[in-house]
Amino acid sequence: MMSPKTRLLKYLIFIAFWALAGYLAYNLVVRYLYENAVLKQIITRLEADSRVAEVLVTGVNYREAEQKTYTTIKFLEYDSRGNPLAPQYFTFSGNIIQFQSLVVRFDDMFVRQADRLKGKSVYLFWKVFMLDGKNTREYPITRINEVPKGYQLEAGENSVETRFWANFWEYALDPRAARSAGIKSAQIEAPGTMFIPGILYTISIEHDGGLRIDASPLAGILRGEKIP
Image (cartoon, rainbow, N blue to C red):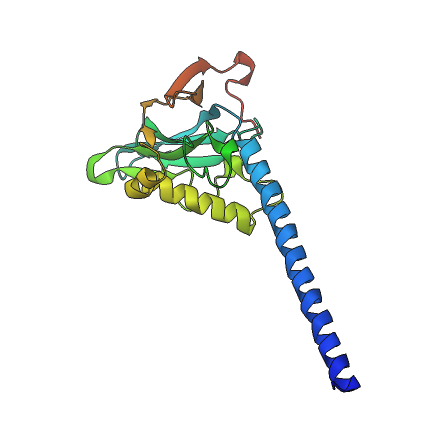
């Protein structure tokens, strides 16, 4: 016959086992709901079917020692919801400047994670550069293996978001990984133009993946003024 102490011990072990099982199950459910909520936010940011940025020449300086004219441009990108990001400034030893875009479509990518990704695309301003032989200069706009600022969640990076974009970069840059996910290719374009003062340049990544640069004169009232 089982002693009272033994029965009590077995009872306590039974209670502890189910308490632990319940705790683990609860954590799994909470984590699933959290990850699903974050993924939903990411997908919402992929609804936009284009991206836009504006460029303005902010400085033209001649360096006598090098006998070169340097052009500084201000690059202002708008996120997937149309809100301006922090501006970036780039300086080149010339003014024939090119922008490179990267477009990746989620046709069959991450299908096991979420069917809602089917038909969505990522549009990135990737690099800006000026070809000049051995003196070619290049600046990253969106850094590889980072969460693109144009799609970043307001709450800041978290493990779910970081993991999602790490997978994205793997598929975008590794042809073998892309094929295994059913992605035929990542579309890259790099048009350029001559950037001169007094002109506002609008750069658009369009729905079909094309990168377009439009130029229009600044409003007369802005000419000659330094805007803080």
